[in-house]
Image (cartoon, rainbow, N blue to C red; front, side, top):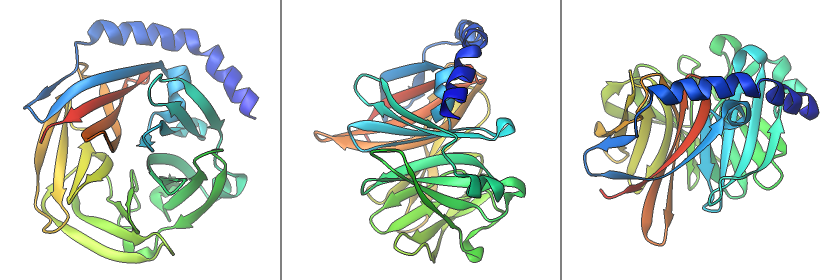
Length: 284
């Protein structure tokens, strides 16, 4: 099956290359409004390769881990990418087992690295019983899944998650008025943190200190990142990224620290033509 999807990606490479060129003609350089973020690096992939990690991003400092989905093909994948060179070192197509697919799980969202494992949000058809999918970070092998407790499912949308210490944090995608939490030891529900404003189109998130940063797929090429103070729930616009292309979809977000420098890593997908990993240094 992996060979089939490798061949499929190759067979559509020309089509995506054409889209790549067309969207490139519509693009301008990415930038940030305000002084908190500075663009440091961009890794671009033709969508025939980048579809495997077009939804979620995580990092352990050495590698990026990405999750991807083409829902109408029931295609889900997970990939491992060298964070320095950008080389795709491993990719697992059709990474969800038949048992999970048979139960309707069809859309991997944003993911998080924790203790040698990748935890990924996953939605099902009709948004029933969303689940946390778990993979081994070394091999990308599937390890199991855990359905969200009923009291933590909300409207069934489960676009992202992140892990800090013993807790999984997540929200629904639209009309977000709280950040929900799971205990990572048994995936039981730990309650929620009310946000001070309602936000929407949330596609990714990660934590820096006491603040949760949430990436939104706001309209046009300008994408808002919100901050939520996990102590108080105070929520505000942290910064706005101009992706340079009005057709761009903002997807996952990961935060890392290296040699005292804080880095924000975003996934941007301009109209299914390419996948871009953009890394910004944070100076807040």
